Length: 286
Image (tube, rainbow, N blue to C red):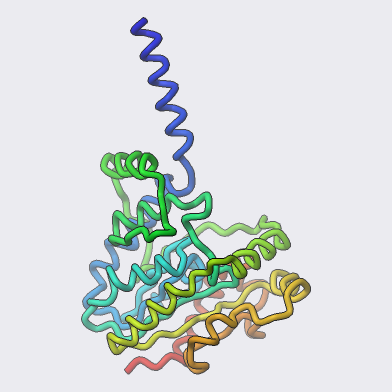
C-alpha cells in the first residue's frame, strides 16, 4: 500500500516536471538571464545607451563596439516586458540618455503569455522584478515549480561583453514561409500590445531621455514572402505614434547580405556589428 502510494507520487511528480520543462526552464536560459542581470548591475551606473526588446535586440545590437552602451535585449520578450523593464531596471540609471527599442514584424500584437514560451516570464520577474499584467498570467503551479528550481540552481555567467552574449544559437532550418506567416499573424493580433508601447514612450520622454524605434533588417526571402501576402505597412502602428526621425528603419536596407544573417530574421555577429555602426551614426547622445 505504501509502495503504491510512493509510485503514484513519483509518477505525478514526473508528469509535473515533464509538463513544465522546456526552453524557459533549461540551464542555458537560466544562465542567459542571470548573465544579463549581473552584468547590467555592474554597468548600470555608467550606461548611456541601452538596447531593449526581443531576440532582435539580443542578436542585433553589438554593444562592445559602442562605449557605455548595454544590450539588455531579452529573448521572446514583448512590449509589456520592455515597458516593465524600463520601469523596474532602467529609469533610475543615473547616466542613461538613449533607449533603443528593437521591433520586429510580430511585435505590435505579440503577447508572450499566450505562447508556449510563457514561462520565460518567471525568470524575467525573478531577476528584474517585472510584474505580470492582466494579460500576462503564468500558471501558479508552474511558477512555484520554476521558482523551486531557481532556488536550487547553481548559476554560471555566459561569455559576454556589455550584455552581448557570444556564440548564441541560430536557427538556419526555420521554415521561412511558416515563420513569416506566424509573424504576420502576431502583427495583426487583437487586442494588440501597443498600449504598453505608449506607456514606455511616455515614461522615457517624461524622464528626459530619447527613445528610438529600431527596425532591424530581415533576410530577403523572409521579406519577399511577406510582401506577397501583405501590402500594407507592417509598422504603421508605430509610425502613428513616433516622430519619423526617431524611427530607424533598416527592414529592407540594401547594405545587408545573406552573410549578415544567422537565420531568416536574426543577424549574426557580423550583421550586428554592421547595424550597430549604422545606429551610432544616426543616434544622438547628448
